[in-house]
Length: 225
Image 1: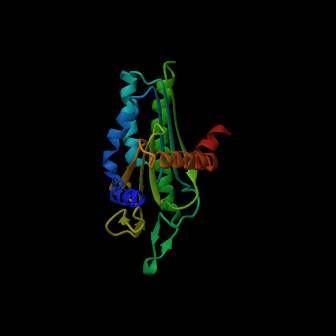
Image 2: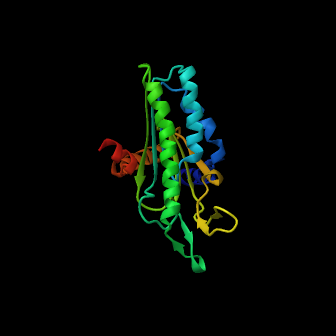
Image 3: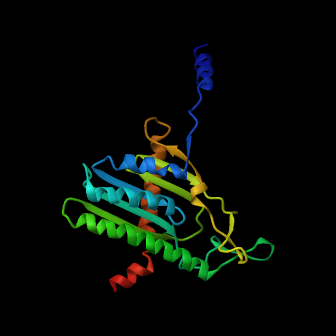
């Protein structure tokens, strides 16, 4: 009888549904992360555009008032746009994915610009001796299927890009497969229960492993040569 009662009780208990947020909500998570003394933000995805804008604003604010922040580490993992890719790609006959070096180069230059902006502020902040700030992009092989943001190793946002999205650079040009990060919904996983703690740990390890295997962009290799 006791076993049956426990079984009935466990069957009636439902795990809370994961919280969903939009990529436009990243600003709140960034601001919350910067309340810590040591800030660590990791990104796995497409170009990191939505997160980069929020990071830029928050780092600029540190120039005026660093508050209690003493160390900031930003790691951005994006696809290796230096290699042929399936997505992003040009839409070919019957919807086939056709690698387009010019389109990849456009995204590559965008990522280089984003890193340059963040690294410039990082250098400015680190120059006063009060802060240690590092902002770096690296490449992973493959298509941008997932979007992952990890804030201070305790809050994980995870979602999937719509790889079927198409766009045109102009009204008469070809179509391209080009995922849109700002429309991606993200599920929020934070520690606090036995069911979520292992998930947060898993994502941190997965990102750390990918970062260790990731390649350095060509613009940084040429700069250090």
